[in-house]
Length: 411
Image 1 (cartoon, one colour):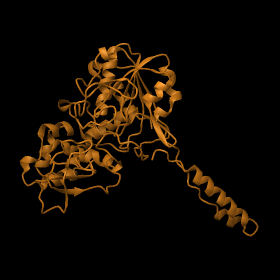
Image 2 (cartoon, one colour):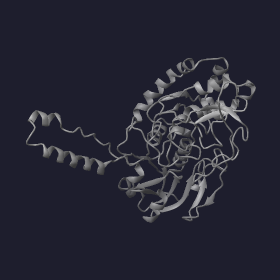
Image 3 (cartoon, one colour):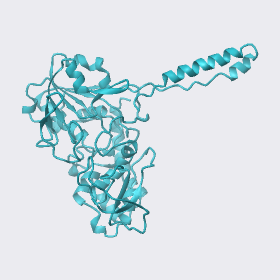
Image 4 (cartoon, one colour):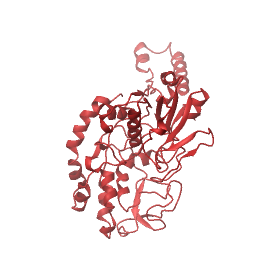
C-alpha cells in the first residue's frame, strides 16, 4: 500500500541475472551480451509522509506547549504497521495540552455531519475538543497557554470534504491569537487533476469556505499556503505558518490510502468516485451509505425499476445510522469496478434525475447548492443539459484557479 519498495525481489532478480550472464560469458559475443542485458525496472522510491519526517519538525516542538488537530489518519508509518502521531509525540515528552478533533471524531467513528461532544481519550487521558460540536472554530480560551498548533489529517482533495474547512478555521483562530500553525503534509489521492464547479461567494459554508473548484488538485499543505498567502482568513489576517513537505510524491503518482480517512470512504474506488457521487448528498438519492459499497453505487426506490437491473437495500451500519432510503429496495447502478478517474462527471446525477419517476423527490435544493457551490447546476440538470454542456460552463473558472494554484504547488 504505502510501502512500495520491492527491494528484496529486485536484489534476488539481480543475482539470478548475474548468475545467468556468468554461465554464458565464454560462449556469447560482446554484441549478444549487450543485447541480452536485463532491463531492470526502476522501483519508485517510497513515499514519506511529513509525519514520518520527525527530524524536520521535532525541533520546532521542543520546549513548547502544543495542541494537535488529528484523527485516526494522523499516524507515523513503520515497517509492518504504524503508530499514532499523538502517541509518538507523547513518548518523546512533547507537551500536548489537548487534541482538537474534526468531523467524525478523533477515532473516526461518528457519522457524516453527526454532532460530536468534547470528551477524554481513554488511551492517553488527553482532553478531546471537538471541532464538529458546539464550535467548529477553536475558541480563544481553547488556545490559551499554547505555543503552537500542529495539524495532521489525511485529506482527499474534494471541497465539501470538511477537513479543509477545519484547517481554515484553525488557521483563522490561531492568526487571531498570534499562535503559529505547523502542518504536516500528506498526499492527495485526487491530486492529479482540477475539475468541477467553483464555489461562489454567496454560497460558502462549512462545505466550502473558499472560491475553489470542487476538485482542487492540491495537498493539504499546499492548500494551507494558498489560504494564508491569498489572504482568505477572516479579516485578511495571516498566520505564522510552517508546512513540512512529504517526500517522493508527485501529483501524478497514485497513492493508496492505508487507512480509510472517514467511515464512508473505505477504499480507492470510493475515493475516486467521491467527487462525482458526493454531489448526490444534496439529493434524495442514496450513494451507497448503509451498504459496504459507500460511494461506489447509487440508487433509490423512486428510480424507474424498468431501467435498472441492479438493486440493493440500505441498512444502518458503521458510519451511517440513518441512511437515505433505509430498508427500501433501491434501483440504480453498481460502480464498484470503476478505475481511477481524472475528472468530475455529471453522468451519474443526470442518469438518476432522468430516470426519477417523481422529479419533485430528487433535489434537496439548499443542500445541493451548498455541495456544488452554485444555484445554476440544479437548473441546468432540470433543463436537460448534457454532461459536456455543463462541464463547458466550468472551464473559465477552472483555468483562472489553476493560475493561482500554480504559485503554491510543492510537488
